[in-house]
Image 1 (cartoon, rainbow, N blue to C red):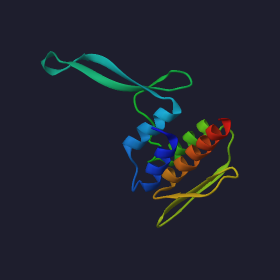
Image 2 (cartoon, rainbow, N blue to C red):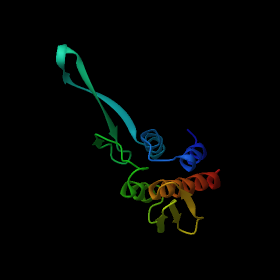
Image 3 (tube, helix red, strand yellow):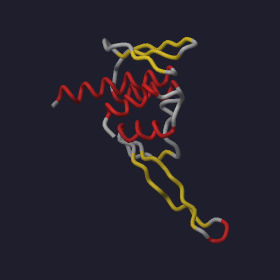
Amino acid sequence: MAISDLILQLQHAKEPSRDLDISIGIVMGYKRHVKTVGKGEGGKEERKVVWLYPSDGDESSSLPSFTGKIDDAYFLAQSLVPGCVGGVSWDSRGGTAKIDDGPYFTANTPAIALCIAALSVKHFQEAEAK
């Protein structure tokens, strides 16, 4: 999925979404790996999905909840834009986020707003590099 399409989906998201978390993880470079963990009931092989972290290949049993947890959205921002500074705010209508000198982004939750801000910086960096 193109980053611009992912940003658009995040802007329209009403709540945190595991599908969007997976799309964000793929943009970050996470790799999905299925392991066989033994035999379950009836002798059937049991499979487990693990995610390989992009920078060191370490195995994680779950992908961060980028759209659901502000700490995970912060991790996304620091991973995509190392050394960035920014801010997040929220009120009864949703959240707003800004990274460095970029624009303010609003969404239904502060975590989603921060994801949009981080992905937008990455998108514009890639566009400038072309």
